[in-house]
Image 1 (spheres, one colour):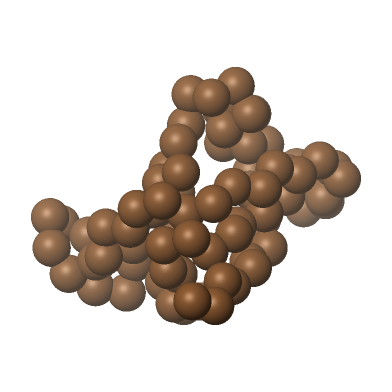
Image 2: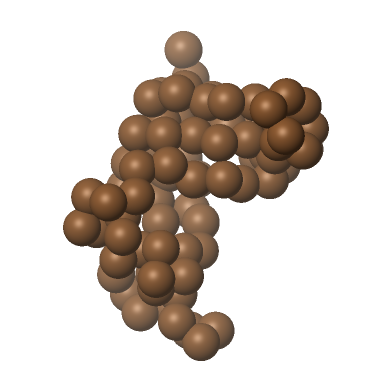
Length: 79
């Protein structure tokens, strides 16, 4: 199994919720072909500028789009 690594922008509101352990999922356009066990690094982004803060997570589950009202081009993944 080959793991992919993804670097993603994350608005500060959502980044802080992840950091506090309140938000444990992402809704994203699946243009990167996310897979279970891929590593995602969320980079905090404020007013068009990266803050330098980041959090890395491992994808544990993916809900593919095309059902439950999720557009077919999107997915929800959690860690």
